[in-house]
Each structure stands twice: as structure tokens, then as C-alpha cells.
Image (cartoon, rainbow, N blue to C red; front, side):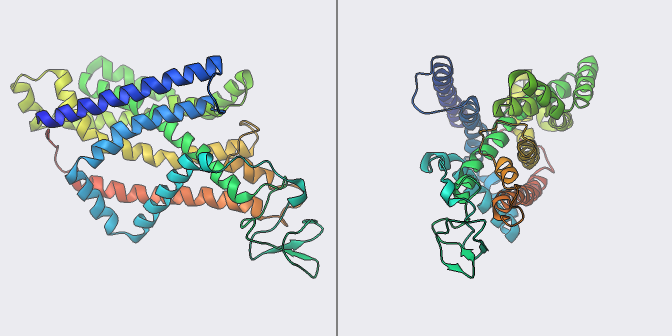
Length: 370
């Protein structure tokens, strides 16, 4: 028990140190511009959120054998869930490492509208064909396996760069939704009475305010920025999480474990740390994970409507730019990012179902400390 508590404190200290270093670097970069590279506010928020995800999700999962076995069994029973988890792992790796490995494409107008491998397009559209030309049809080559866009940029490179945008939206928004929803839900579930009523009424009011409208208003005042989008949806999207945590907190606080802890003299902070938070953690993480596809699709829709940063290489923006005067002849420019969005949303849904199954297997009883 003491060893476990010591490991948790060490993890927390390292996470706080890493967060402090990132926050200091962000302040230097955003205020003084003294760091190399072109990190945006969203990039810094993503780094801070990643530290929180590692500390609160990855490390506790890796150090809990019973939880690992439960999730492993749930995914082992479903081939689709394993494939979905593999795809999401690749998506996350590409989102993190892609911008580091792949430089932003500059484009070459002479290579515009080159078709993907295995497909052709009229030479009137692709006037400077790199592949063989047969009967006035330009054939795709491995030089640009997914073709090029209207500016001559490689679509595969654009997809890799766009994965970072989608990952940032999901991770940063979740890093705001989870702690806010958990804090409000725990406060309501443990306090009850007028505090519970007031917090839940506030949640009711907040859920009537569309995050989309708030973002559009803020974008009109402050400009179209990705960090503004994730803040709007993150700060206004935690109502359902709070309700879930409240119900779970009430269930846990009425259990025999917590009653025994009270009899033993444990205070409220100790009960929350040892019983409530460990028992609601899985439910909160899975609920936040289920929201990620919706957030990614919302960003894509806003980018499609030109309501985000015009220079942002998101999947939605790439798809929008493919719908020009040559569409549907140049279908691949829009089809590739659209397929990536659909795959990501479906994979997250399938993996989320398997994770909920694993949660159901372990939720019949309230777990004590250990």
C-alpha cells in the first residue's frame, strides 16, 4: 500500500514538473517568441493535455493488472475491436510524430490534380502528368500514391499533417471536459442538498447553450483559431460527464467500503482519493473517449464551412478545397480526408463499445483501495 502511494506521488510530481516546464516554454514562445519552430497555442495545450493523459490514464492503466486483464479479455473476444484499437494507435502515432517527420507541403502548381495510383484523369485536368498517358488519360504513380490537390500538394502528406489537428481537438477538449465534469459531479454527489441542486441546475442551463454558437461569436471577435474552438467545446461540453460522475459518486459513497472507511476515521479527502475517484475513473474516461469522434467531426464540419483558421491543414479543410470546379473528376482530394474521418469515427465507436463491455464486467461491485 505504501509503495503504491509512493509511486502515485512520484508520478504526480513528475507530471507537475513536466507541466511546469511546458507552461514556461509556452509563455516564452507565445509572449517573447524566443523558441525555434512555429508552435501554436493549440500545440502547447496539446502538450500539457498529453502530460495529463499519461499521468491520469496511461500510467494507472499500465500499473493495474486486473484492469489490464479485463480490457484485454474484452478486446480479445472482438476482432473488430482489435482492428479498431490498432487503427487508433496508428492514428495517435501519426498525429504525434507526423508533423515532426513530414514537413508541411509547399505545393507545386505544375503537379496539380495528379490522380492516385490505379486511377486516371483526363489530361485537361492534369496537364503535367508524371505517369504514363494513355488515350489522353493521365495515370497515377507511386510518387504521389493518393494523388495531389489543386495546389499540387501530396494528399498523403496532407492526411498525415491533418491527423495532428484531429488528435489535438480530441485530446485538448477531453483534457478540459474530464476534470471539469469530474469536479462538478463529485461535488454534487458528495454534498447533496442545495449544493447538488444548484450544480445540476447550472448543468441544465449550460447544456442549453450551443458550443457551436459560442465559438462562432468568439471567432467573430477574436478571429478563427483552433485553440478557440477546443476551448469553447471543452469548457461547455462536460455536462453529461458531470451527471455520470454524480450518479457514480452516489453509488460509491453508499457502499460498504466507504462506510467502513468513515468508521475507521478517514476524512472526506481521503475517501475521495481512495474510493470515489478510482471507481469513477473508468466510466469518465470511456465517456470522454466516446465524445472524441463527435469533436473531430465538428472541427471538420467547421473547417468545411471556412469557420476555422484558413491556413489550418485539417481533414475538413482539405475535403472542402477538393470541391472545386473539377469535382467530381478530382474526387480523390475530398474522398481521402473524408475516408479518414469516417474510419476514425467508426474505430473510436467500436473500441468504445469494447471498453464499455470491459467496464461492465468490473462494475458489479465497488472496488476498495489497492
